[in-house]
Amino acid sequence: MSVSADHPFKTCFPAALYLPGDAFDASRFQLIGRRIAGLQFAQAMAASLRPAELLRVVCPEPDSRNPLVASLRPVVPAKAGIALSGEVSMGSLAGVDAIHYPDPSIAAAAEWRAANPGADLSITGIIHTLCTTAVVAMVRRCVTAPVAPWDALVCTSRAGRSVVESILAQHTEYLARRFSQASLSKAQWPSLPVIPLPAPVEPPIAPGLSRQERRAYARQRLGIAATSFVACSVGRLSFHSKAHPLALYRALAGVVEAHPDLLLLECGQYSSPQIAGAYRELQERFPQLRFQVIGGLEPATDEEKWLVYAAADVFVSPADSIQETFGLTLLEAMLAELPLVVSDWDGYRDLVQEGVTGFLVPTADVLVTTEQADSIQASYLAGTLSYNRMVALRSLGVVVDVDALGQALATLADDPSLARRMGQQGAQRLREHYAPPVIAGRYRQLWGELGERRRSASEEEWRGLMAWIPADARLFQGYGSQPFTAESVRASQQEPGDSLLSDNMNAGLFDQLCLGRASTVCAHLRASGELSLAVLLSLGYPEERGRQILATLVKLGVADVSWPS
Image (cartoon, rainbow, N blue to C red; front, top):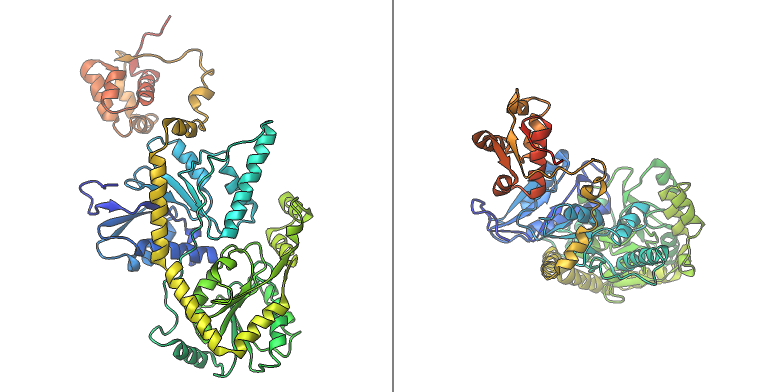
C-alpha cells in the first residue's frame, strides 16, 4: 500500500472514506443521529491514524469540505494527514485497499468498480435506518449487482443484520422463482459483520469533576434540586419516529407517589409546533408529574445535552419505532455514567447488560404475528401513505410493558447505590467495547480480512463480476454496416490536414480521447506520415482506445485508410 516516492506519507489508511455532506454535516442538514454517527465515525478513523499514514476522504459537495476538514484536523495525530478530493476516481483512491460508504449503497459502488478494471479494492458500507423503500432497494440490489464476498455491509447491531439477511434472502428466493430455479447460491452476498458505532469522543460536562460533583454542578446550572430523582430522555422528541411517550409517562406516574420530587428531563427537538403541542397536551394529562424540556423547537446545544446527562440519575428510552436500529444516545448516557432503562428493542439489547448496566423493558410487536405484507406496507409502497405516517402506525403496534418500565425506574429511585454501580459498569463497558480506538481497530481488521479474501479470489470470480457490464461493444455492434479494423492510418494529403484538430469543435474531445496527450499523437503522425495501432500501444494506450484514436483521425479527415472491399 505504498504511496508515490514524492508523497510525504509512507502508507495510506486501509480505506478511503466517502463522506457527502448529508452523512455528517449538521450545520447544513438537519441534526439527526445518522449525521452525528457519521461525523463521529470519521473522527474515530482520523484519530486512529498512525505516524506517516494518510487518510483519503472524498467529499463531493464543495460547501461541506471546509466543515469536514475543520472537524477532522483537531483529532489527526502528529505526522499523519488527510487528503481531500471531490470525486471517486482512481486518483482519489490511490494506495487504499477499500472505500467505505456511510450508507448501504455498496451496489452502486460495485458497479463503478466493475466499469473500472484497475479498481482492485473492497467496498464497504454501513446500515442505519432500514425501513425506507430507498434503503431496502439499496440492500436488495446487492443480490444482482457485482457485489462480492470481499465487500461488506457493516451492521451496527444483531437486529440490523437480521433485517439485512431477510432482505437479501427474500430477494434471492424471488429471483429463483422468477427464473424457475430450485434455488440460487448466496455465495456472492457481501459479508455482514456486526460492528457497533463508536462512542462519542467529546467528554461529559466538567470532565475534571467526579460523577457526583458533575451532578451537583449540572443541577445548579439547570435549577434542579439536589434531592430530586431525575430521569432523562435524550434524542428526537418524536412520538412517531422515536418513542411514543405515553408508556414512560404512565410508568413515571406509578413512581411519583413514593418519589414526589421526581423530574423528567426531555432533551431534544420537536420537528414542528404541532408536535410540540401534542406533547404538551399529553403532559397535561399527568398533572402529578414534573417535566422540563431542554431544546424544544430549537435543537439543544451540546453543552445543554451534556448538562442533562450530568444532572440525571437514570437514562430512559422506551423506543418503539422501526426507524431505530442502534441507539447512539445510549452510548452517550454510558459515557455520562448513567444506568440505562430502555425497551428491549432492536439494537438496544446489544448495548445493555440486563441487571448490570441497566434494565431491558419487554416489548410486544404485532408485526411478529405475520410474514406477509400488510395493508400499512402496501399503502406505503403505493405512495398513498407517507413515511412518517407509516412509521407512526407501526409504532402503535408495539406495546411497551409499562409495569416493567415503572418497576425498573422505581428500583433505581429506591437504590441510588445500585444506580451508581450500573452507571460505572456501563462506562467501563463503553471503554472496552465502544471507544473510538476499539471500533477503528475492528474496521482495520475487517478491511484487512476483506483484502486477503479479495487477493485470493480466482480469475473466474473476477470475470463473473465484470460480466455485469452491458458492454457497448456488444450492445451496438449491429448499428454500423462493418467494423473499423484498420491497423494503421496515413496522414491525409488534403487540406486543412491536422489543423482540424485545433478547431473548437474537435480539440477538446480529441484531447480527452487521447487522455490529454493529443499533441504526442499528432507528432507521431506528422513525423512518419502514418500512425499504427502498434505505436499507440507502445505509448501506453489500451487497444480499444488506440482503435478509437485511429478511427477519429479518419473521421475528421486528418488521416486516410483503405477500406476493406
